[in-house]
Length: 356
Image 1 (cartoon, rainbow, N blue to C red):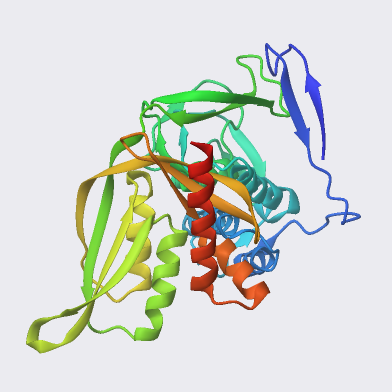
Image 2 (spheres, rainbow, N blue to C red):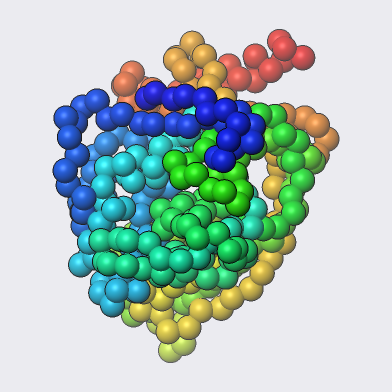
C-alpha cells in the first residue's frame, strides 16, 4: 500500500491523505464483472476474521439485491460490473478490516450528500444518484446538492447502510483520533474529503432502542432454520434465536425472533419474509441499554487472546475472553474447551487484581 499527502487545494483545504492500494499478487486485473456466488466464494475462502467476513458479505448482499431489483433480475443472475472488479472488493473488505483492526464496535454517519447529473456505467448512462444507490438509501436521510458529480457511489451506500447503526442522528462521543482522506475528483464547490472520527461513548452505558421481529412457523423444513438465522445475521440482525412453541391444533412450531437496529429493520424484515414460510411478522420497538466496551489483545500463558472489556455503571470492569480465540487454542493444544476457558478466565481475574 502506498499513500501520499495532498496539501491544500480543491480536494481539501487542509492536509489530507490520498490512499492508493496496489495488489502485488496480480499482474493485471482484467475481470470487471463477477457473480454473487463467485464473490462469496472468494471471501469465504480468503481466511478473513469472522466479523470482517460477516460485514463484507452483508455489504455485497445488499448491493446485489438492490442491483437485481433495479435491473429486474435476481441476485443469482445479477452481474457485478464495476463493483465486481478487484478494486471494489478491496474497498469493501478493506473497510471491514480497518474497523476490525481499530476494534470498532459501532458505526454512525452524518447525513449522506448526493450530487446530480449523469454517470457512465456498464449499464449505460445512469442518472445521479445511481438507481441502486437510491434503492439502498431508502429511509435514510440524504442531502441533495447542486454538485454535478457522484458524491455517493453504490459501494459507499452499501457500506453505510450495512455498517452504520444511525445516519444523520446526533450522538455523544469522546473523540480520540481523526482520519481525513481525499477522493480522486477535484470539486470546485466543496472539499472532496471523507473524515472518520474514532471515539468512545460519553457514558459508561448507552440507552437506545432496537426493532424486534417475531413470527411463529409450523410448516417449514427444520433443515432451513440454520440458513434462515445465518441470512438474518448477514442482513444486519444483532440477535436471532429460535424458541419451540405449541401452536393451534396442538401442532409443534418455532418462534423466530430477530432483533436489529432501526437502520437495519427493512433489510432484516425483507430477509425474514424471503427465507421463511411466514406470511405475517409481529413488529415492536424496545428499549436497550448497552455497557461501554472495547476489545484488546492480551498475552496469556496460553498465547495471544482477544479480550472484551465492559464497564459497569459502577465503574467496575468485566473482562471476557473471545470464544473463537479460546476455541482455537483449545483445538491446537488438544485440550477440553471448558478447561482452557476456565484457565484463561482465572488468568484475567488474577491480572485484574494485580493491576488494581
